[in-house]
Length: 219
Image (cartoon, rainbow, N blue to C red; front, side, top):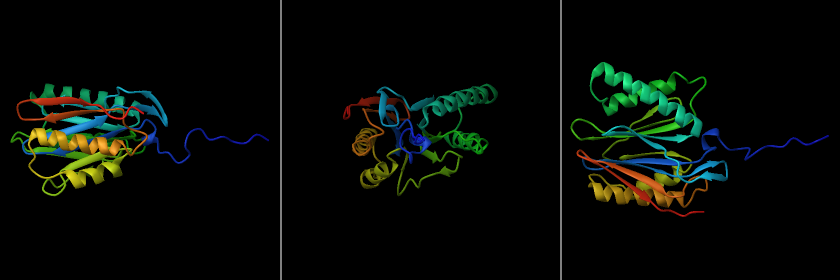
């Protein structure tokens, strides 16, 4: 009698199947969001140019960690909802309203969920940073900006949280915020085999968005 074989790692979560890491961090009138560039199938690397952070409008970005097919599906659904919102309201959506929209879209699919973990970073009309994260059924996490102004998602969440907890401080200027989030992400990627291969960082300021690409270990 033939033995039954298990494909891949038997204990691996479906949200870890493609790997990836996303982190967002608040500064003084600015906010940053960053992701790694690896696209994998379990322990096999398929591509090294996978984008996981998407622009919703000039002052609002969303990062999606988790299953790549659900990332694409959810991103298309968000684009449709935002287009309808802009058509009806004739203005850009507020970051807090967008967070509630994402949470609602995830919760309404709770019995057959999208296997993604969203991270939202944006600036409101007063240039105050807004951060949001949730699990795959939409339970929101809104961090206290005075004590831990960052949110994380992906396969190296524990490593990212430890790095951010030790390096983040309030009221960082854009350049210091870029350096801090970059070092936190690269340090965490060194300790996770399901994410890495460089990173992309977006720093959202009141008058511009700074986007830079980081080189990491290519193994």
